[in-house]
Image (tube, rainbow, N blue to C red; front, side, top):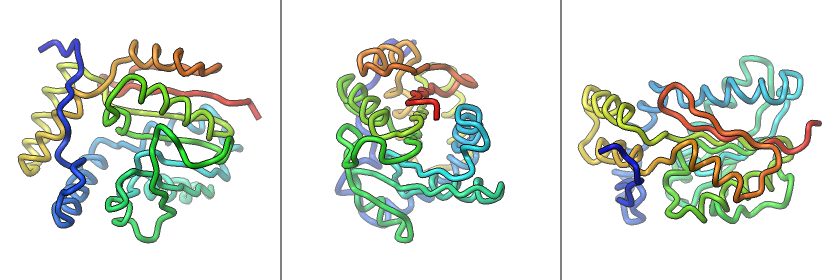
Length: 230
């Protein structure tokens, strides 16, 4: 129960044969949870800190594992309120999830083999996606690919595997009255998460020359990988 080892159980929402109505309903509930937990905040805080506000006036971003593109929409709206122009491209392996965002810039593809050339985007981001990868080698490839495609920086955020977060999330999802299968997915997500020490090892194995990993607010693990200082 101390979560020393991560779980291998799959999440229901990841099933390729999930009916369209259930997929749409799942992302509807997921949006409520994400907005409540302010899932866009790490990017709103750390990108201006890392790049400087002047550099943030105009950015192209790639959101890896974007699902229905909610994060990209939130970040574009947040940037616009500051007079900034952020253009987000959404990438996900699930074309049916991307189809829930018909007006977006959507690309179907893998986080471990991004279908873009080097330095294709100013920034590469990922939120609550890394725990969906199966193996350590997949995570190393994901980190390496995010760094390769980013011209300035890659910023990756995910759930941190720990008991206190697991218990707090279980209470929160119960209070929100999520469908049982989605509550189960939430719990599995934490159990499948990685820890700070594990991410630091993956970053080392990915040969990221200027990266740091840290633990934030008892719930998140973040990786920032800089690529040039221009």
